[in-house]
Image (tube, rainbow, N blue to C red; front, top):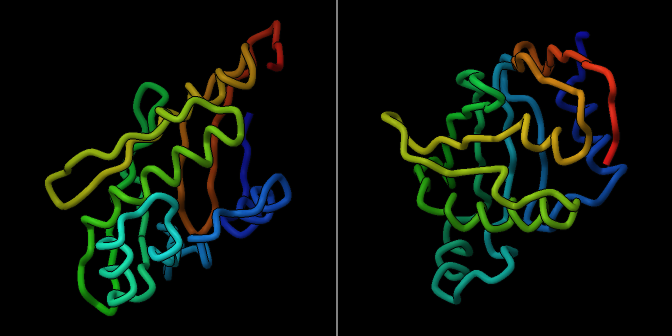
Length: 165
């Protein structure tokens, strides 16, 4: 089974379930549509230290670009780049990881569905997509995920019996 949704539709669906975290100002497909951009206000990160908030206030809006690098064994590997006023600020991504994990937990999902790792060209986010699906249903296997032209495509196999959790 093939499931297709534009980045804008995915954001609308996410907002229909629950508001995006306050630190997320905007989410959109990147120019060319092969990545997703998110504008973030690091001063609104819950639990951030005063020093981080001061640095965030000086940096201004942080734009994070996420580019899907590949799919393997139920995991999506995403290259991340973060900029504020044209300057790379990848170190702030560690602060946003806690926000992502909190948002997952608020949805009743395991917070360890995402991992931030070092890649050869910058930070990478490993998203355990199959584990997220398994937390919600059994009998659904995600075979592939791609992002091209602003459209997320997932190849999914349904293996009866399916049970929702």
